[in-house]
Image 1 (cartoon, rainbow, N blue to C red):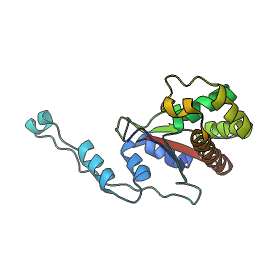
Image 2: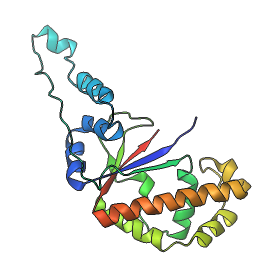
Image 3: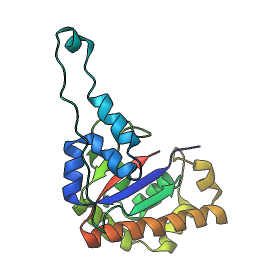
Image 4: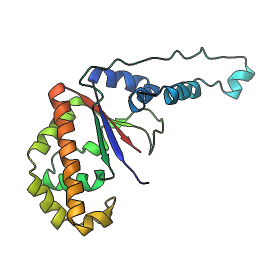
Length: 194
């Protein structure tokens, strides 16, 4: 168990649609299964006791769908490496946006560890550019010289052994590939901590 990080590429148009109707976040996070989305719709459509006492009913919610382009729904799974990676990247590129913090929440629906977050396409592009300026050697140097007190999985990062180095580099490469894809395709991202 532990806190894992997953991100999904999404068009700015679909991101705006999801932000306007937060239940649709399940169409991204659970794109192969309607159950979570339909459960959320039912929950959002419940009539309160007060409304029932006064004979008020809500109109039934009509399920909606999202259409995704080929560039959308690319998935980034950083497992539990996200905070160590974030720490090293911030030391390498202190002016870069904080990708893992996102730019805001998508509604108030708990999708794991709180609501899903979003990051706009222009911010993802800035982050991708910052990552391009970080060499793997520089990243590993930050792993060797940093204080990881308070960073998630600090025990792993403090060991600084081959396992920690390989874990950091593998996920850095995945993050760089994902953000480069988003930047080249004009994609935003939805972020999910599970």
